[in-house]
Image (cartoon, rainbow over all chains, first blue to last red; front, top):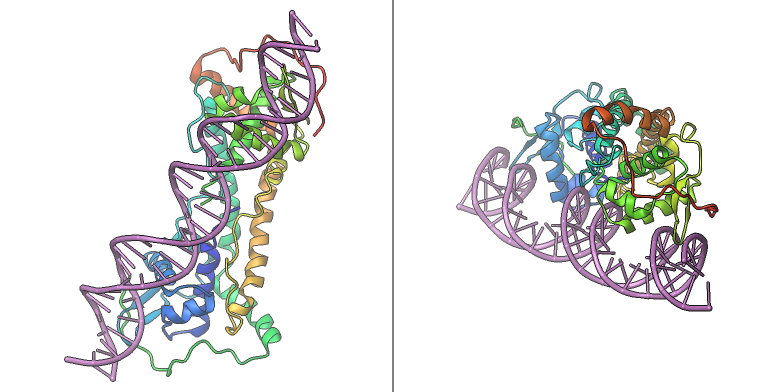
Length: 164
Length: 164
DNA sequence: CAATTTTGTAACCATTATAGTTACAATTTC
DNA sequence: GAAATTGTAACTATAATGGTTACAAAATTG
């Protein structure tokens, strides 16, 4: 339905950061894993930073890393950070008020959509980024047989990370 | 999230038909209630007809009406008729296979999204078109104070309705 | 049978959201 | 000060949805 991969990409990005631990990742590195443009990643990181999920740092040796414990960060946090605003939408144009159905369908549908959203949120609330990373590990090594490598960093880590 | 009002409109259309009972509605009448173009409605009716939810008839005195008992038609039936294909989408471009996260994130996310979809479907399965119409009635008459009227039909009903 | 009505359907345009790209100032490290 | 990296603007591209016009096919009416 949603022609929109923002949620999938956001979970991907945060999983990468959980995987790499304290080491900040450059938007370039993340973009390579996601297979997109670094600016697309930086735009998404702005949303995630605003929600307090990541912190970033400009300059040489800069990058972004998680601002929270991945075991306590749920997919609901991610979903809400993206401000998607609900699974379904109501009418674009308001229905006719001269019709007994049209005049109230938005109210009734609004209640239904709220139920749907609550159900989605309940599912997302019970899955953490750490859960995702754990489920990533077994199949990851099985499929590739490679040693996990995330970038070409020298291992040094910037000391100060600006708060969002 | 979804910039897409198809589900809302479909429920609206079917509620209209449940309200008006056996009398077939013209796409023109439905479009007036939904506040859109008749062709938009006819396109949606094709999806609903293909799913067996409505039957239509061409020609003078033609129109569309429900093909099923509204008390047995669930919002899940409506949702599936639209072939929306899931609440979230995965990556547009496949992630890097050289990254331990990228190589398996789609598999893990696929499982998560399946859980989400199941939760949505469970909610929709427990609401019928008749439920919607019942919830429409009280507020409808309270708000408008008008006698419910749906169209300008003479009350005569076409005898044969072609099957989808 | 001929006129009228209505759906089915194609073709096209408009709008919107998302994604991709280039460019560059601001920030930080070395 | 040079190099690297984010933040951010501006623009283009792509795709889904919705809106519009037009007309053939089907059904009713007289």
